[in-house]
Length: 337
Image (cartoon, rainbow, N blue to C red):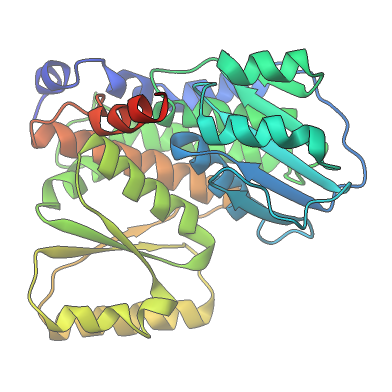
């Protein structure tokens, strides 16, 4: 595969946005945003769907070892546990997501504090008209390709309530820059980790992950589904040992991909060792992907950067344009009637 192949199949040049992800991250985090003050917050709910929902998943992973309770809502309704100490963060990159707009409109009946992020659209209109905290962030190509811009812009905007060190964010961006040298489109050779994994995927991937990296696994599934138009499954490595592992007793076209943390919990490492022994005993080929050695922001963002590029390369290898999502458009058209 060469650059001309990508340009021919990727009709909207999505790959060029990914080539710039580390630079977009840096620019976004260095940008000056208005920073609303939220006091006495002990519960944060991230609401969003699709590519915007991934942002909530990522924040949930980032905050998983902090004292603030977090949850992710992918739907129309907030949980009844919402109170005056809850911050609801609504993200809709397009600005027109029905589910997110419904939650925003119900804010008038809630004691919670709200802030919304979008590139404009109905979300912006409603928030500004009703005095709801709002931050506009430009979309890069599509909601899923805008991840880098949104996650680092929101880390900056929400730093009064998101207990993440600036040094951790800068480390994540620095490691993305190093990752860029390996996986970007100017390095289409045998050393490109993303390209190699994309070439290996010929069946249906089953993505195994430890709990702390669930957001990266979910994002990988979503990106393969949207960009490569591929069926994909995900499995928590610990839970899979109590059920999903049995399915490998039957032959299939499924391909295991093991997403491991650099410093996983020692019992999780034990489980990885055992499941690899099991796959070897069944002569099932698998691939391993390890996170970078760093803080949780670095691990998640760099895994997503790497694995998103896998989906781009896989789509090109398969002769599939990664940008169009006609099935999603079909659903949206029916909902708008």
